[in-house]
Length: 348
Image (tube, rainbow, N blue to C red; front, side, top):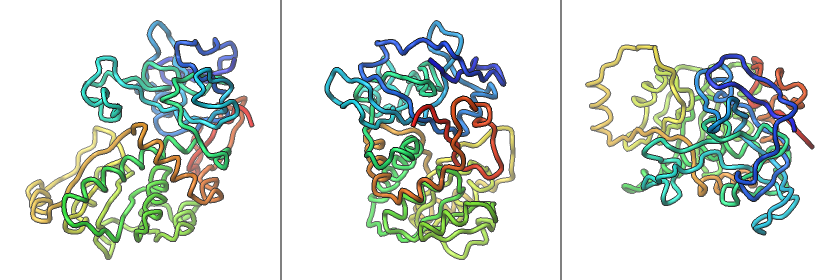
């Protein structure tokens, strides 16, 4: 079968393999026909050789972690042939650590987890894949064209879950949220904010292209000015750019008792001037919280599936900039200037 693979650590080793072995039964009882995979920055970083780890004993890694598939067989009876599913990316470590032991592999403490298409597990960019039933998330049939958005939605579902848990440390009645960055994660964070009835503001550098209209279609307000020029103080910030200057600016901008969730990953090697004392003073005197959030556990995936089911399907479809057949895989992994989400299609 066909699969998109790389040699981890080797830049530009992306290759469409025509004779990839069928998935081994040990991978899981549920056999799935791949429909599509979404492509994100993590894939581009793996392709550039920054990281990635092949399964034990193998040289190449099948990539792809934003999955959408159709069940072919499940002898356990958990799922039925024809069901739409997405595969959970991270699996708990084998020790396991205290968090992985209770299903919170997103909070793994020893780093020995594995991840499909990223770390020691084959990914979903292959014509068929297997998975254990507890890592297969069923999707409503209405999501047949956009279900590959479940993985990034699970990331922001976790972010909102933790925001709300922190918020309830005291009387909490948030009104306004600021999302920085209007990529897929930022737009999906804004979607979940709008579903919560909050006044949503999204900030991004783009002044043209699809982003402003996608934000306005949510009933949200779009901004393309620096954070310090905004004329409001948000109760919640979901920071999705990872840009160091933006990260610091939103810490200062949050309202008293505000919560800042850092969901964007910064690249190293860049220094900016910081008055640490002033930042500490602002955070302490206003009871503000800043925390990081990454990955998601099964509960967040299920929350995300329900959020996507409730969303406007046309709006979700508008997040997908390009749909590329697997035969054109090289084009799919080449970034375009107005791309939001590119999807590699295996079947329809």
